[in-house]
Length: 124
Figure 1 (cartoon, helix red, strand yellow):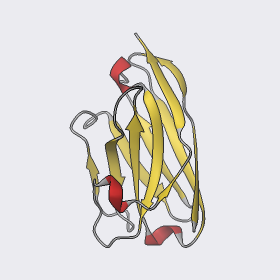
Figure 2 (spheres, rainbow, N blue to C red; figure 1 turned 180 degrees about the horizontal axis):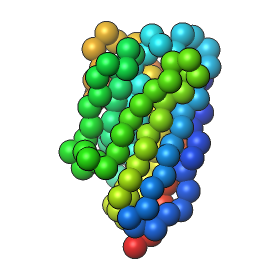
Figure 3 (spheres, rainbow, N blue to C red; figure 1 turned 30 degrees about the vertical axis):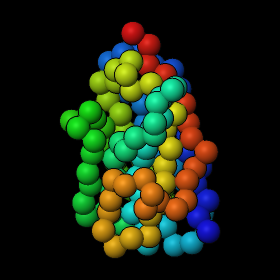
C-alpha cells in the first residue's frame, strides 16, 4: 500500500505560479512511476504529467508543455509539480498517482494508488 497526500493548491491569478507536492508513505517510493492528473468540474479526469520511477524521463500533456515541470525527490518520498504561467483553464482538482509498471504511462488505469486531490483555482 502507498499512501499519497497532495498539498500546495490554492487560488492564484492568471499568469501566476504554484508548486504542488505529493508526499508518499508505505511501500518503496522509488519503485513507482508518479503522475499528476487533474479533473475540472463536469469533466473527465485527464493526464497532466508523469515521471518515471528512476526520474530519468518525463512526459507532459500538450496543454501544459513548457509551463509545468514534474520532478521527484526519492530521498524525501515526494513528487512535485511546478506550474507556471497558469491559465483559468488550469482550474481543477489535481491528483497524484503511483504506478508500479516498468514503463511510465499516461493511462489512468495503470495507476493503482491515488491521493485525495488538491484544488487549484486560477482567476482571470
